[in-house]
Amino acid sequence: MMKLDRRQILALAALAGATGAIGAPPAAAHDKTGKMPPIPEDAPKIAMLVFPRMVALDLINPMTMFKIARTNIMLVGKDKQPVNTDVGLPIAATHSFADIPDDIDVLFVPGGTMGTVDAMRDPETLEFVRRTGERAKWVTSVCTGSLLLGAAGLLRGYDATSHWTVTHLLPQLGANHVDDRVVIDRNRMTGGGATAGLDFGLSLVAQLADEETAKRVQLILEYAPAPPFDSGTPQGAGPELVEAFQAATPWMQEQTRLAVEEAARRLPTS
Amino acid sequence: MMKLDRRQILALAALAGATGAIGAPPAAAHDKTGKMPPIPEDAPKIAMLVFPRMVALDLINPMTMFKIARTNIMLVGKDKQPVNTDVGLPIAATHSFADIPDDIDVLFVPGGTMGTVDAMRDPETLEFVRRTGERAKWVTSVCTGSLLLGAAGLLRGYDATSHWTVTHLLPQLGANHVDDRVVIDRNRMTGGGATAGLDFGLSLVAQLADEETAKRVQLILEYAPAPPFDSGTPQGAGPELVEAFQAATPWMQEQTRLAVEEAARRLPTS
Image (cartoon, rainbow over all chains, first blue to last red; front, side, top):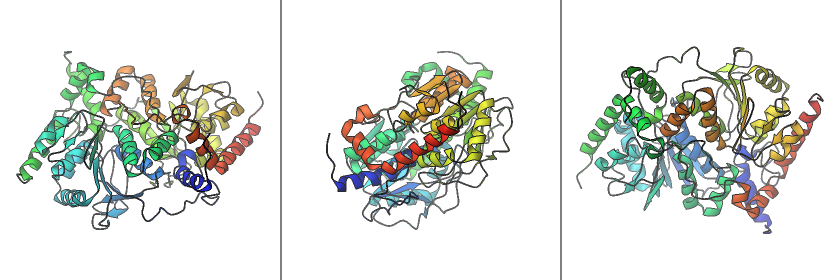
């Protein structure tokens, strides 16, 4: 077995203590009430967008990973009023659009189809995403979040993915759809639908820190998935489930298509 | 391709509309603001425990699945004041211990190690879990939540699992540890650590509704996991990461061990 020195043990302790999943911090790194030492000043700064009707798990799965990895997380919204989410749990931003510092390392946009459609039609949100994405080291999304990145002009000429129901719309926003769970093209990292946030989160932690840190996060969250069925993709689910789903959601599909067309018309021709 | 009749399409539409992940409901089942029809009176009633220092994703991943499956979800806490979670997002119960109806179908307990330890030492919480578990059709948990079920005497003589860091403590609470991602023994269903909530959620939806519904939920959430590393289990992570983790968390381990011993002493001898 590898022998760890005190510095390594303290680093691991801090990492371990960062999540309730593995419980209270050891005395070495924290006091006995579980209080964490402050996040280091030079930890990566991650701006995670919060908007009405977003999908809570799109945010919370990667957020948990970023927190265990001891990054500096900002939940950013138009204001700090709680927004409602798909599951009815309100989430409040910690920072408003005007509040976040200039040196953001990561812009992250979760999904939430009709929430995404509303956000794509909101000039203030689009402008925040555009200007933050232009200066961030990483421009990232999960699920339909990539449509909002695309609407802000941030995916033109990039490989990207999205929720399977909307990937065919990516080219209208200038992106090239690649059918992978997590797509990395230069400093763009986009994940597939909803639960892809876990695979995305580990991939981004590996880039922001290193593979060792990502592997520790994976162990702490016991991410060794074993789905009881194989219906997580249109291919696995089969044509009947897919066709039934699409037949059942004409209004959503139409609104998403329209919002993408409107956004595409606003993009400057390159 | 299968042809769907109107009833089937409406049922799917309702299902599809239940999550922001796939967006707004079709006009057939919802109005154009995305308002859902009420959950049917006879939908399964799921009581999900909320307690301080719980792990948010332990709750939110299965909750999202239960919501898409159109069940009646109650977040149950000592009171309705928001509790803090591992990621710093407050979650408020919708029901207090005294509020929930007698005919609960599912009791669900999320994890959160030191939060779990506190809950195991709280007579009011233990009593709520015990009496609700005794009358629920399903008694369930994710992550360290099974320690709380065990402390309430609900796992004696049952196969169960938990987060990998605490599975060795299950026998003290009368449970038999089985090393699976989701363990079902009669009406007990326990999941492994944290992210096992997704595999658990699909398994429970299949039991409460049917496999077809679970597969639809899986497709909507695009749950086709592809972890970039293989460190989600102690075996996959290897002895160095595991030993380092354990060396870094002596206080947490000691507190959990003590809380389990205290709970074991309180259980009636059978």
